[in-house]
Length: 81
Image: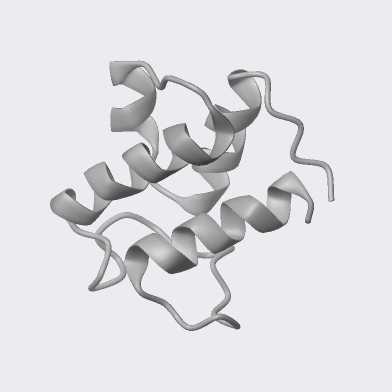
């Protein structure tokens, strides 16, 4: 499984979305299941899944799936499909 697929699955699992849900257009608080509590669960899940430690600024900046890609890649994770 590619790291990109792992990222998608992490969003689906953490936010309680179906296995085939399109996560590419998700944005913080635009989806009912992505609230502040879910955001912190998502941060913890991403840190665990990719063995990284997000900085406070990164956590605050992660406002969409697309932004999460940039942040995870900035942590040295290759997300090529």
